[in-house]
Image 1 (cartoon, rainbow, N blue to C red):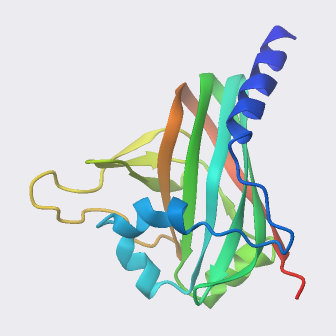
Image 2: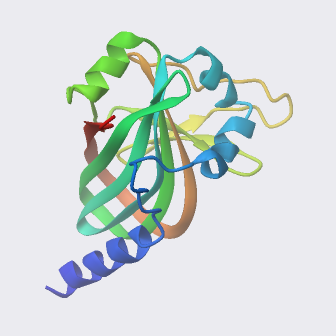
Length: 194
């Protein structure tokens, strides 16, 4: 019971920094997207993707069983088409809490449609490129490391490509999480009422 209360407190604390949706359902996330737009790894995706989903703050925590939750917006042609929720469940050795942002690019209409129609899910085999100040490394959505994505001297891109029509990037905001767990992410899309 104590673990459950601790887990709930961590998630609540991390999500309290999540911006609330404006009355019209659209928030300006341009400031939060800046680190992705300025990264040599993720910036090109803004020009060549069909659309993207952005979650400015995802709170994650766990003690044995873990979870994560975040709210965001979905874009096509640079315009918001709806809002989305991200749910993540993990099982395995894990302890702590963490906050991060997540950006998912859709390579084409098929990938975008899968996301907005509820057929999109990231499992333990999916990987994300971590965008950090000064270094980028690849991290699995289930918590496992998957290698280096950018050469330290040359700036040459070694990772960050589309896989099954999507490219996923994360930016850690804070917290500490020890994790050797598997999990999956599920998403729920809500179109804007216009």
